Image (cartoon, rainbow, N blue to C red):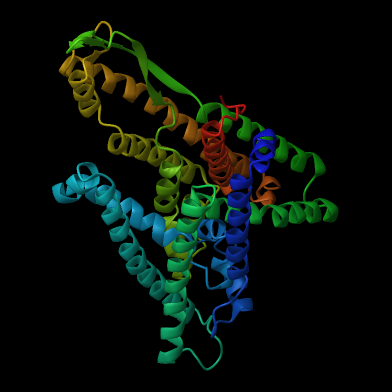
Length: 428
């Protein structure tokens, strides 16, 4: 990775793109430090200490701590992610949107992107209103502004405009920077909390609340998780494909052998994000209603065995769900048939699609179990070790996976741009 960045820095055009990306990230971090008016930030931070391992706590992690400080970028990229997922699902359910995304090429993709932008603003407005009501109902607004209509409008519109501005910043990185704009912003949010986490761990060790060897094991485990994520991210099942020879005019085409790559972790980190949101819903509702103790804490707490089982089952479900959305074996088999390709040992058409579906089910199961292990093992460690919970490990696996996944995507994007300029990188 360092060699890739070094080679990219030598190219003037890529150097400008990297500097532009760093400038946008800097602007994003500055926005994360500007609080929204009419909010009691001190009381809000104290309130969020009870919600660290709920859905709101997870949103706080993805926002780099901005959510618990009620800054102008508090909603982070959540509205955009939700809008993208909704539009992606609607493209499957609504034939008109499906034709727009598949048959109309670049113009259709631009229209889908425009619809996603409007949906982002709408979802941002709803989330901003919900966050305002949360603060109002729990007495987290500044004194004298609890029922002020103008204050409510300012707070809600500031949250909404902040989410729209983040979306625009991400698009600028994608267009003029090194690419993967939204992912880069998400990466910056997660990594920004790393120094604070390390400092808190050192303080706990110094105070005697956390044994030094436990902290060391936690960081060694994090390194092992990173190695596993890197290994599985590049893993794929390659199905051999043979193209029949055909004569067009006086030329002969085809006859070559290639392969059909199928990623082991095809759905990425999305199953974890979906599962985290649903599994933490009971605890979140209990915390918002002021009933976070008792049986909800025992059975649905972020370190309970039942929570880990539900979380693991939901990850497997969403892994299959998302892979079904992303990869259509019938469509792939039909495309192979149209182009004169076939998988050796299987007839074109239905037998090929059935074989691809069978392979897809197997590798999706492996990918789902891998995601489940990454997400659930830190929870189990925190359950059986009270001292390990002081490291904030229960949602650490998810954060590490997102950060490493974005880093790998960024390196691949730089590699692709260098290959176009006759530079050979370590991924070649």
